Image (cartoon, rainbow, N blue to C red; front, top):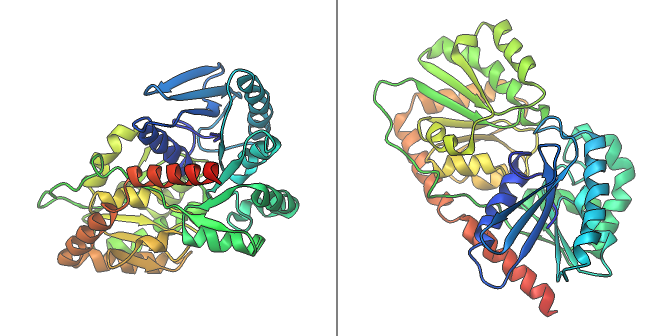
Length: 372
């Protein structure tokens, strides 16, 4: 398995890989070596159960949530060499690459020795992230070749699948949604008299649209000043978003909690009242799933896989629309019964999206490929 992100590095794909391997560690008939990046400057190997090994390649990683071209190229070069070393002592039946680039390209290099599948995650799909518009121009032919040679290409949402088909309309693409740990993330009774807590958990990058949430806050506190906005996450826009709050005079209403230990996240979710993710584009948000499992009503944008999670358990809003965010938040603040009903439906929907189900779907896919 290849993924240049693995906790504590990275976002949704990192956590998805963690949970998938955790479930695989309980299954008979599968053994996995994950090749990923080290946050330190030394090579490390970790075990998960008796059948999973995580090989962490030192790449002189800087920020946990931001990748430079140098870091990606270093991971790719060192990992290809390391795979060759592993293959001298171990025969592999299959390679599972998270992201078409760079991991799918690495898997493609070994296609004659082992079949591979590619899990599409978002920014590896042309058109997903405006920041990579230039790179998509010359990467698109490579991406199409990697997809076409794969035994299976898997998107984590219907929305991402539809976007990928714009690059290659003839490509067969399956969908396996992300999962959520419904035992770890659970609803908790809300305390009477507490402030209304509005929560957003996301990387602090442009694509997550958190500036639009911040711009919505002044009109909210004009009508309801008993609110608190919690923003969890790290990223290159951290200081810029803080300055924006100061400029709008709302800094006392907004708390930036930074990167939070994963074990502390469940209590933050369960002690909140409303979850907001105003992304400009999204594959299948792990944080929305965690908020749903925690029994929260969801406010999110009409984009990618996020809208596929909303069915009477939240409010869909247009992208880049601060007024729509403030209107949706005020609707939920003013109607406690609606918040409760949407939260209850969120939990019910999340209960059908376990990581155990995701692991079984992938295991069945592996088995089908190897039987063919």
